[in-house]
Image 1 (cartoon, rainbow, N blue to C red):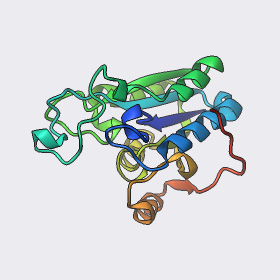
Image 2: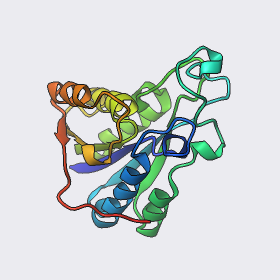
Image 3: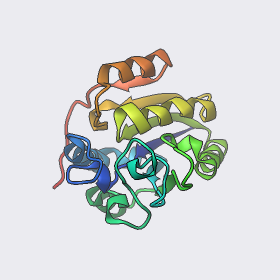
Image 4: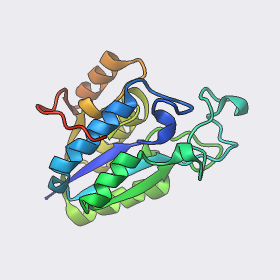
Length: 198
């Protein structure tokens, strides 16, 4: 049985200084990088999701959506947070990036709403018989929540957990925790020791 980690949207536009920044995101992603130094090899695979939007994406305010323009394809804001990539490569961890929100007329908070990325994760589950799926990333009350909930349709026999310490939240902290727990997703509120990387 396998154990995997799904890191949701750890991209520069969602960190302080980005176009759609979430408070505390940079510190939490740096802490996550430190966690991976110690625990990364416990996972049989690490999967990073990434918004990969066209400039004409429907979620942008200028196109009638509710969000500022963010994570436009090939932009600096769409890049994965560099300290995470440094640890993943430096520790020689098995990882890949799965995109979502690639079509201009589809909103995909959840990576499982993207047909190609969902199919990839289904194949991983079929091949590895995943026992545990850990989630973390940005933002707790949007893309993280939706991805974790949708994962239950793919990883039907797996334990789904959210590492809350590495999940910056926009506004709906308690409500999101309740929704996750009501759907039998374990929310781990605190990792006993915090690891930081600069």
